[in-house]
Image 1: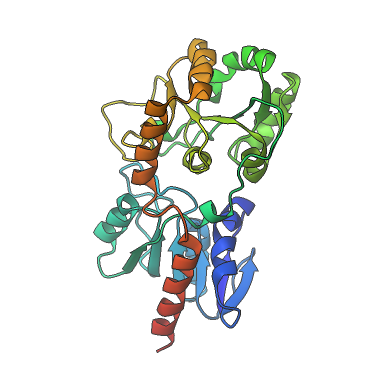
Image 2 (image 1 turned 90 degrees about the vertical axis):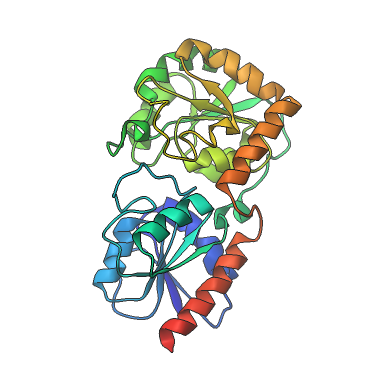
Length: 303
């Protein structure tokens, strides 16, 4: 049996489509706690991966997003160190795969796409436009990993006065800014799947959810901050695939960026599609593709 390990719900969101695609004969459990010794297990976070390695289980890793990295050795990102016990890496794109290959040349690495895309809903019919806004947490691994809440929050009152706004955030900062959303009359929506069901436009600074929302065919606004270095190229969000949405560099420009994004002219759509082609090697069927690779890998492990 192939089990899955997810210490947080947003990791499980990326694992469950793969688990569901496995044949019942090998479909194991979704584990949330410390794993016991046993057979193959799949994780989507470095802390879960390390826990599986400590439990001496054969472990496969899939990204819990687009495979963003910041040109360092942090194990939370593709190319990170300290994961020598991993037997298989499943990646959404060649960018992430190349970084894993460079660090672990003897490990099996497969580009399968992003399994979560198969499970994302499109907009349900209803009045709009509805605008969703989200922020990354203040991660310290690189300036580009830091969220922009402190910089762009001043634009939210005007945004909420003009549009119906849904407030979302990375799980590590959500509880902190939820009360501030509510003070502005912004409805807090914790589940990104609900954002996809309800919003016509998604505003965010740095998250794989930017590309996930865009993959459903709807526009996004990409928030930048003064500490995002234009001369540093990490790939994907920074900067090759940043054209996935309308760029907003200053709080005073947010309303104009939203208007431009909602218009969604053909050239904007083309730029979005080009960016998505960088981020996702495949737009459909990733869960089944990953499941097939896992069955094959588990057979190799058992041999």
